[in-house]
Amino acid sequence: MSPLQIQIVEGNPHLRTLLSWQLEKAGHIVRSCGSIQQAQAPLKRNITHILVLDGDLPDNSGLEFCRWAYQQMDAAIVLLSAKDSEADIVAGLEAGADDYLTKPMSMQVFTARVEAIARRIKRCTPPSCLNYPSLRIDLVQRQVTVSERAVELTPQEFSLLFVLAQAAGEALSRSELLRRAWPDAIDNPRTVDTHILSLRKKLETNPQQPHLIQTVRNVGYRLYPDAATSPHGTLASRSSNGKFAAVVGR
Image (cartoon, rainbow, N blue to C red; front, side, top):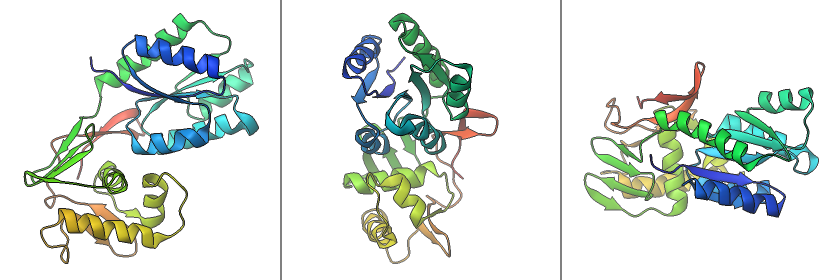
C-alpha cells in the first residue's frame, strides 16, 4: 500500500519527534509542527490523510482546531490529550476526532490506532490524479495539463484550482474560496477575482468566454470541465453516511 500523508500538531517537541519517528518507521510521509499557526499553511497546501492533534494546546485551541479540521478537511483526526475524564473524551469525539488517546500512551498502541485508521482510508483513497476529458490535475506532483499541454501554475493558483475541484461542480463563494484556498486570512474578494482571471488565461481556450471555470451569478465560481462530463477520478469527502464517502464530479 502507498504511504499516507500525516500531519502532526504537537506542542511537546520530544513527543512530536517520537510520534514522527514511529509513523515514518511505519512507512508514512510525516509533517510535524508545534502549533496550529505553523500547521495551517501545510494543511491547506498539501493533501493530508490523517491529522494527529494535540488537544492540550493553549486556550483550548486544540479542541477548537479539531472542530475546524472536521468541517474543512477530509482527514481523519487522532486527538491526543492528558485529559482522561469521560466528559473530556466525549467532548473530543464530538468535536470531530476519529480516535482519542490519553497521554502518556504506549507508542505501540498509538501506532496500531493510526494504522487501523490508515487501513480504512486506504480502502477508499482518492486518486492521485483527477482526469477529465481535457483537463488533468496531478494532486501529488501539483501539475496541470489541458488537452495534453502542460500548464505552469503558481502554488496559489494550484491551491485555488484544487479547492474548486474538491467542490465537485458546486459553486463556491469568494469568501469560501478565500477561506479554503489561501494560507493566510485575507478579506479581499478581489483577490479571488484576480487569481480566477489568471487561471482562465492559462487554462481556457477563450478566457473571455470561460468554459472550465464558470462564474455563477450571485454566488461565485465553479469548476465545470467539459460540460456535464464526470471526471474519471473521485475525491474523498464526507457524507451523511460516512466520513470517507466518494464524491464524483458532476
